Amino acid sequence: MNNTEKIAKVIATCFVEREVRKSEAWYEHGQDLGSPESVLEMIKFIVKKEQEIDAGAPMDTIIVNNDSGYEPGKNYLAELNGTPTKNGVFKIINRENWGRSFGAYDAAFKKYKDKYEYWIFSEDDMYFSKNGYARAYLEQLNKDDNVAFIASIGIGRPDIGRHRTPHAHGGGGCTHRKYMEETIPVAFRHVYDDGKLEALKYSGELAHFSKKGLNLEELTAEKISLYNKHTRLHCLAGEVPFTYSLIYLGYKIETAEDAKQWYEFYE
Picture (tube, rainbow, N blue to C red):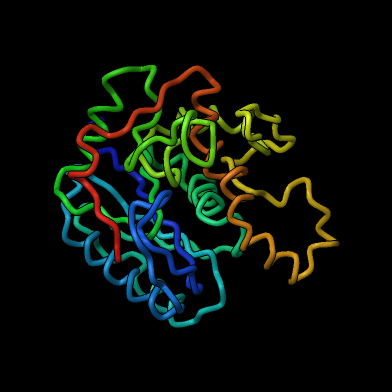
């Protein structure tokens, strides 16, 4: 990477009440976001970090809002659009509330894939707290052509946990455009408990629970709400195949070196 090329960092968000959870078995951190207002406060905190922390490389921050209809949040992001970060500018995308974080990642990639070589994906309750993280990720990524993704938090292992297929937690991490483009034709619809995969019938998208293949005439507001709340569905159609598809293609994914020095969770 040369100094004139910019990274696209994608942060997925949605201004909705979220399940309160404690730090335990599957979660490295607790979360208490009981209202859209509390999510907005979190986003303001994340924005401040984007303005303060030096990523170590030119980088624009793309915040993708899965639009829940919360107007104060939309208005805040609209005013943020085009304003400076520490290493670039904010860009805002508002989209239909569908597919959770992985639908948001796909939307950003579709819109900007020709403008950025390198990509960092992040959910909204995690932030980078140490200068130089992007530079470190890129250096690790470019050491080995067989490594296609540097996972920010870690990799789900096939022998433990709820999902038996290795994948980057939350889809968070750093990659190159060429690798993600390769995953599009081999995206997966479902991951079974034994780790076997059923090939997705859709193409042209990064892995997420897509509307493609669904009967759109039967998608009532009630069904859409149920789909959006179905966490396991989005894990199996989004979180797992988002990076496992790279392994399927013969690449490796690695956890960032000294991973926990770079990030923290909003609590």
